[in-house]
Length: 170
Image (cartoon, rainbow, N blue to C red; front, side, top):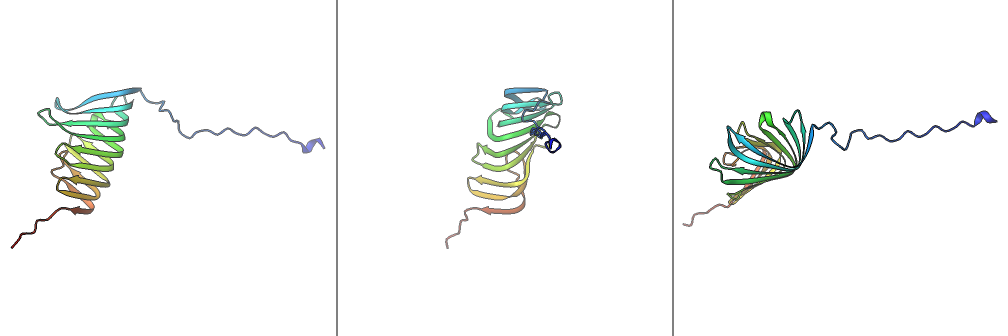
């Protein structure tokens, strides 16, 4: 009978839940270079392969981040790299994620999956796991707070350290 043959409805096409293209960005910048300053003194230079600007340029979503830090005298002090980051200009705050590596010119090397550089507080910190290699010791843990020079370093949890010990000879 003809009533038994119903036409098949067309299959509903698959729709992506989120756009792969950040179409709400105010601007897309390729090869971003910006100077990080504090009261008109250069603290560093931020480079990014790609930057998406939001909120009239106040928030930058970054891909392939490289920051070179400088002393108040203008000498290179260290470098930080990561796969991604978000910089909020109004807060002078940079949060980086993905294979974060900070290499200081004094020989210190910090690795972590996530790190925040807060210029206003002059602090770096994370609540993620980290490894800090120094010329004379190795520190590991989960979470830390420190000044950018890593001289006032405070581990928060699961803190472990390995350092050579001089045993006096009698």
